[in-house]
Figure (spheres, rainbow, N blue to C red):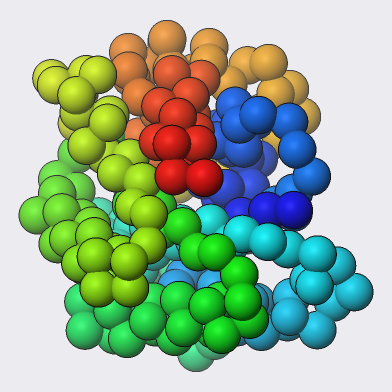
Length: 228
């Protein structure tokens, strides 16, 4: 059985989870909307105490998008500061050094439990002014850790850019976050609308600048499947 440890990209409430496009087999969707790498480590320790964890043979780790996304959104408008500012006390964002440190802890915990670990790189963001160089730096950390520990690395962003080299990167969530709220409600209630959001917004790889559509979900799944 596979445990997919991640955030909303794994859960698949807004946009599709890449798990939807994986071969059907027993798994646990350990995706949590808005979670960070620190939260992923905390939840891994919680999962280790569950009755089903001993049956897990492989843990796919794909987390860290929110450590960049949420601070970026806070810089774009007052309402985003309100939305995310109150969370600082319990949801810490990791800088590059902290990100590497916590990822190491996740990896070493999984390996100490005698399970296979697959590292999944962070996907491309299609948001305006998103710090792409920071995203590339995080993926370089994940790749370096994969090499160091001898683990498979699923280069999702590399695969996305190979498929769509000129992907649009100027979508805007808006200063009030109202579009985001509509996305959560509509995609949660009517999942079949997800790819329609991509088409209307002319987004090749996301439904909202962040979350997977069918095309990118399939690309991510293929990258992960090659590592299993």
